[in-house]
Length: 447
Ligand SMILES: Cc1cc2nc3c(=O)[nH]c(=O)nc-3n(C[C@H](O)[C@H](O)[C@H](O)COP(=O)(O)OP(=O)(O)OC[C@H]3O[C@@H](n4cnc5c(N)ncnc54)[C@H](O)[C@@H]3O)c2cc1C
Image (cartoon, rainbow, N blue to C red; front, side):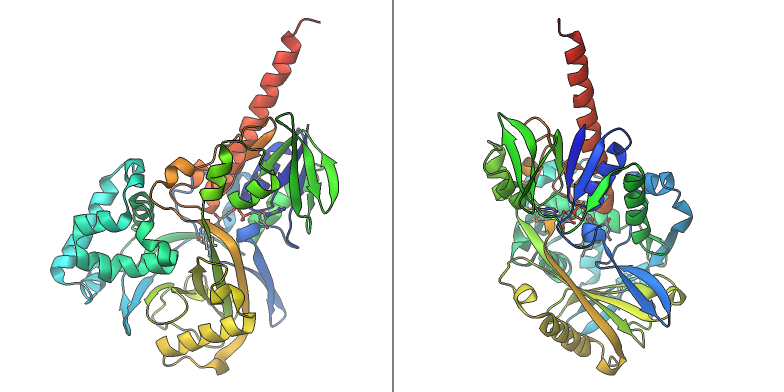
């Protein structure tokens, strides 16, 4: 069977890996590099090469499909579990947020508010099934559960930095998912996983497996149409050429899928149009001196700066692996007219550096060795109230068309590498089951 996979992110590569041993697989990727949002830069410092993700990445112990894949590919020895410290910068003050003692000193909340926040976290941890909360707005649920001060002084800035003007519409199910996963912490901070050498090793291993089994991965190839006739996939159009195939797995954002299927998905068309995605403008900065001297990894920010978080990678991974300090400065954006998308790269970087100067008085531009900016408009669905109804099925309707990606059920109520690996595997499995069923049907037909 000839299978085309659109997109070489983790969903596409995982599906390709599962299918390449018994099928002819071609992965088309529009970008020059593979890996999608989990792609890395290849950098060099003092003659030593290293890989570092374009967007900051870590994983959780509950990421079972991803961890099983890492093991299956023989990469388990690269897994590290480390404490990632957190802090919150609010209205000019820096608050470490790791130990109960530190949290008690978070002065934007009174002791009573802190108790309410603690109760809210406990309550969320006890909720097994968060799906009924998909219909409730996170804002309304926090206001009724813990009161205005907890919402305004704690959650609202975090949600605003992630969802901008859409923050008020985000579902309580999304918030609960985040709180559950990010409250798995020890006495020093969060327990987080990372692959020493970077997640590039995972992308590279998947690529090797696919090509070793005679699958192909073609970069700089944008699929502009999935050709569907008589309710069945015929092939795809790539850089103007028609490529016939028996099945397609699409991992691209819903709006793009809608456009490249040219209105052939019937009832799904309205859903595809209604799923909103947002973008991320993420700077990676190499520094002579570290930014957060207390060893903090993740800083959430409520301040008048154009970014919502600063993530000091070399306060998480050993400095020696890189030989220089590496910091991410990042912001989500909701509209293509956002300055983070329309401004030139050097303008965005300049605005980020200005922001760093205002937050860290000891930071000097003289310490900046290099900067990079990675920005895309398709980095996350907006998990609005009622989003659950929009989760896309693995089989899309026309025979031979399968969907796997950030929009799949395995990525609800938050997208992740684990969710995309799982989506890739599930779509591949469904495809193989349907192929098997068709073959059996043919065998049973009287001749
Ligand atoms: C800032 C940021 C931080 C993150 N941090 C974490 C983290 O700490 N932990 C975690 O688990 N996850 C994290 N994620 C999420 C994780 O990166 C994604 O969920 C996952 O990589 C998505 O994989 P995917 O294959 O579904 O999609 P993508 O990686 O987006 O892959 C889709 C691919 O399709 C390609 N494509 C699109 N249109 C076409 C076309 N027409 N033709 C051909 N190719 C096309 C794209 O170029 C892309 O390569 C983070 C994401 C971001 C943005």
